[in-house]
Picture 1 (cartoon, protein in one colour):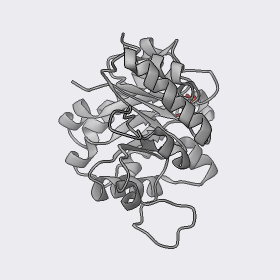
Picture 2 (cartoon, protein in one colour):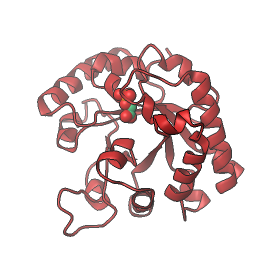
Picture 3 (cartoon, protein in one colour):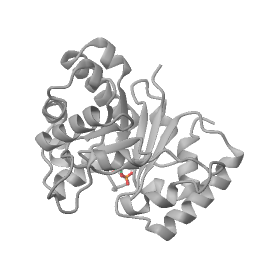
Picture 4 (cartoon, protein in one colour):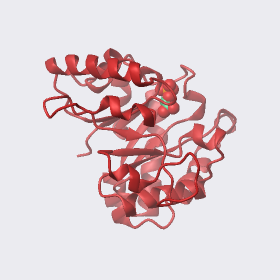
Length: 255
Ligand code: PGA
């Protein structure tokens, strides 16, 4: 059984003050509700500290980062390494988000190095590998070709053992931040194909065990229907994860 996983990607939103407020509000809300899936928040790095409990009675929110560098240390202005994250209790790292690819020129080759660095240098961090087609590619029916190339290059050189630890996040770029969600059936169809692709690239065990999220305008109103699809194991959520009440609804969609 694949355990569902919902991750909030805050992008460049919620500084220290707002993150503190989110933490307090979610702590209160979670006093009354139990969550029985995996979840995490990926805040801006500077806000991580606001989501860490002050003492052991405080709420422990599983944490993710939005990016990481593949080198251990050195002259890489503005970057953070896997080793540095190991000093914090970080559970996941989103890698290859379309905004990183579009605005920061991340290529499949760079994404591959980052995924490998996490899998090989960290004991605690799970990479969440984001991929997906542009609107133009979607309109030209190129979705599966684009994804095939992204996945074969981004997962290149991984062993079966390493691959099954990765979380995949299918995010059609035309659905990100646009309110245009892929229909649950549409997302299911692509993700089922992705699972078959993983079976061919690795083996059936990896294909059955790897968790695949959908991302792109997921919100409390559409999460349930998406999660009912047999191959969708979770969601990567931007806008609807910024507010504690909305995030709670997402991670308790099954209640
Ligand atoms: P969105 O973003 O939920 O705001 O569409 C999703 C993402 O970029 O991961």
